[in-house]
Image (cartoon, helix red, strand yellow):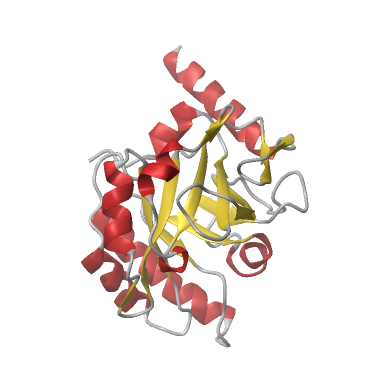
Length: 240
């Protein structure tokens, strides 16, 4: 019976990911936000400068608040985001669920990039799985990019003992990653042109706007929604 109920819950969650989102405008956030999904988050890097994290935590308008934060950690072979350590520490202090991401350079060694991320990112129970942001070919072939990305993912997955999340734009994913990487969780970017992301598979997170206003952060911020309920979200988190 428990197995049947669990399977039914998974089925319902998968259906919700494909439902058209009902958007409502929120004045303080300055964007339209989907109503049929309850968990919302932002992603930040040194581009946002110094963040006043208590103000981010305090932001709430009606039923919408910030539940999770994606934070840039590393890029390429040896680069680290200059705000990563402080952002990671402060987001944790404020009680946010955190996810660290690596910006992938398709022309560089996937193995070396994985080592860069592992060297700089310690993940704990309650954190999101490691994330890799892949969105450009940089002139290399799709086949070569896929090879290096597979190398990256296999090393990171083995080290953290959890399947990494892939971030990409909907068109890039469908054109260059689909089928080969569909067994990984997906964080998809497709800005508010449609009532759901145009990607040909289930998604876990949707970056639906790049123009959110967030207390404590200067300039516009990317805004995201999780594609399920709180139970599904907790199931995705690292357990170790």
